[in-house]
Length: 154
Image (tube, rainbow, N blue to C red; front, side):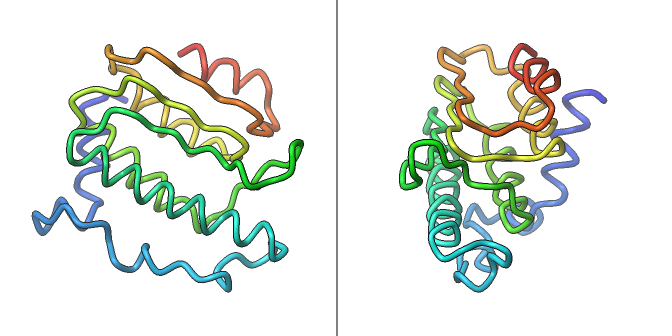
């Protein structure tokens, strides 16, 4: 359960690490609305823009950026983008970029739901980031409030 083992696991499962390329996997960048099965048209559009936001944030972190802001502002006030398996590889890419970053000053996720596996991945990734000045989880629709509080305080 060590952070070093976690980082090694993230890195060895990434195509960019294996071949030395820092480019985002092309298979993940072409996300059409058809991949979002179970979403209505508006949710599919928001999910696609969230994935594109994650791609951009990951790219920024890989070249020295220090901010993570995954906020779905296109949804209605009370709406939350539901968790979807198509976003999992994007969370993995983002976490690997966080692991390799020199520091994260801001981490914010708003109106985007993620499951326990993503919560654990982010928590393990952020654990040793001493440069963190802002940490915000807002309107994430967690089913398990106790676990969510534990995640935010770890």
